[in-house]
Amino acid sequence: MFKVFKYPVPMVDEFDMDLPSGAKILKVECQRNEPFMWCLVNPEKRVFEKRKFRLAGTGHEINQYYNKINHISTFQMADGALIWHIFEVF
Image (cartoon, rainbow, N blue to C red; front, side):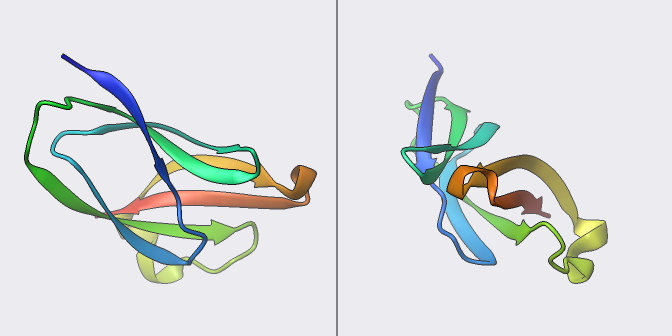
């Protein structure tokens, strides 16, 4: 059985998130001005994996990760004044 769960995204440059093993990231978006990550997960799985992420605003440097990242999503805050890009680091 699979369900969509949401997880809060911390507003820091780099962070780890414990997600159920095999979780598929669907989207990152703001809900009531707070960023969340929606994932398709099997809630019956009791095994979690630590996954690493990089959050960067438009124009921010991400060179140290260039060959080790996968773009997940782009989202807006402050009525579009701030644009953020979230990457998973491998």
